[in-house]
Structures are given as C-alpha cells and as structure tokens.
Length: 151
Length: 151
DNA sequence: TCAGTATAGTTGCATATGCAATAACTTGTC
DNA sequence: GACAAGTTATTGCATATGCAACTATACTGA
Image (cartoon, rainbow over all chains, first blue to last red):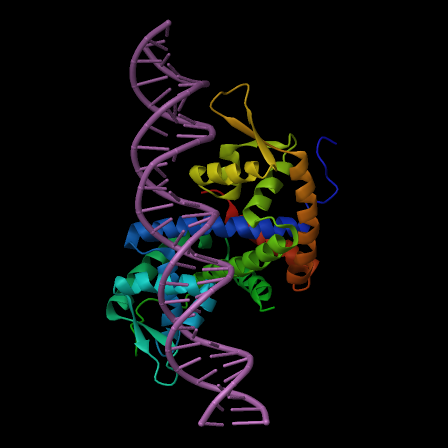
C-alpha cells in the first residue's frame, strides 16, 4: 500500500469518462491540425459554420451558436467576431427582437466550408472509418446520443 | 437550394465526430463544474492526479503526463507548476536521467484526490450511470478504445 | 402605463494553453 | 572520447476562453 487507495481510481465509470475525454482530445487535435493545415480553418470556426449550415434558414442567433458549440456567450461573441472579420459570416439585425443578432453564413463562408468538409471527410476516413465498421459507428452514435441528452 | 450544399454537412461520420465533440464538452463542463464546486479541484488537476495514482510507483515523468492528459509539453509544465504550488504533487530529480523530472503525488494530493473521486463518482452516477446500462457502458468503452488507438 | 423581472449580447479581466525557440542532457557512431 | 543527433523540460509570446458585470431590449402583471 504505497499510496492511499481508499477511493477507486480504476472504477469503470471513471475510466469511461476518462476514455471519452482522451479520445475526444486526441481526435480533435489530430483532425483540427489537419483541417488547419489543409484549409487554414480552425476547428471551432468549422464547427460554427457547420451548425449554421445545418439550419434550414442558414442563420443562427448568438445564443443558439453558444449552445450548439458548447461555448459561453462571451466566448461566442469573440469567436463570431473573428469569423466575421474573416468574412465567413455576417451579423444581421433580427426584426422581431432588437436584442438578438442573426449570424448568417456568407458566400465565402459556404465556399470555405465546402472545402473544409471535403478535407474533413478525408481525414475522418483514416481516423474513424478505418477503425470502426458502419455498424459500430451507428452503435457509438446511439450511445453518445444517450449520454448527450439534456439534464 | 438556399445554401450551397455540394458537400455533405450531414454525413454520418461528420455527425459522429460532432457528437463525440459535443458530448465530451457538455460532460466535461458539467462534471468539471461540479468537481470544482464540491472539492475546489479543477478537472485538469484531477486528471493529472489520477494518472499519477494509476501508476504502480505513484509518479510520472513530465512527458508521460503530457501524453496521458493530451496536453503540449509546455502546457504541462505550467499545469504541473500550479498543482505543485497547491502542494498536491512535487517534482523530484530522476537519478538515471538528469533531464527528466519525476512528478510524485503528495499526501495532500492523495487526500484531495480521494475526496474528488468520491464526489466524481456521485456525479457520474447521475450523468452516466442513470443513462447507460452496464452493458451499454462496456460497449461504449470498447468502441472508444478502438477510436483512441495510436496512429 | 409602469415597475419589476427575464433575456440577448458585449466587454473587462484573469487565466489556461499551444507553438516555437532554447537550454540541459543523453545516446549512438566513428 | 568527441561530435552529431535525439530527447526532456522550460520559457516568451500570442491567443482563446470563461466569468461576472453591464447595457439594451422584451415580457408580465397590476
């Protein structure tokens, strides 16, 4: 008993959360670096553009971006500042609510996102598809969805 | 066709990576905030202490910590600086290699880690165990392990 | 209509972190 | 044994981010 071990550092649930944390960190680093290398687009920017494109209207309010990308609202303000300065999105006033801002993707943003998606898909092939079968991927999706539900 | 959609923003693999990213972010935020609230221990500190305790010798070199916690070596230097300043670990010279540093957990560190593990386990119960069955958790562990393998 | 409360977004400030350069040391090769 | 190349940790610098305070606007009930 060289070290205190009253609490189970090897508990199955503790291990699982650690594995999730580590897997995400490694994958994000690797994919983020490749994306930046290939398209000069930081992963958080990619995330924002993707979230916006996925809406039917092609725009999202600041709060929705913050929630979708899991950032604070303050962080989102600065993040959108940078993406807007690069010309990939633009802020627009919301007619119904003068407090709110609509963030819309620009033509340049759409073009950059297409480029990034193409590169991203290539990277995902080697780092994900080569390691998990389609069936395994769909199982993983289902399990993560359960974990991801709101409080 | 309001927006360009040449590239599949809804591709199954893109969605899966996004889900992994988001799930990790939400869980880390939530568990990290609870841990900090309950024990005044930041999640990255917890991670470092846990990695050290899991070794048979109760110590780890800087490089090993950087790798295990998926930080840069520079980031690890500062992270360990802070944890050491709090008294939870200590740097020790490595007899075989004078470049290397052994980081060992202190008594205070062990005590804090026990406290944190207890709280962490409680939080994991509500945020993980209540959402996934033991069987689902073991499946998830297996799938994440596959994704987490080295390049 | 007005007061009180809730919500949306921004800003100041503190801090954590990565990258690249550097210093100290080790290892392998001749 | 000495030099080249590799490894280990630290530091300067730039940047991203969260928190809390703040402003502006919307809603709710009397």
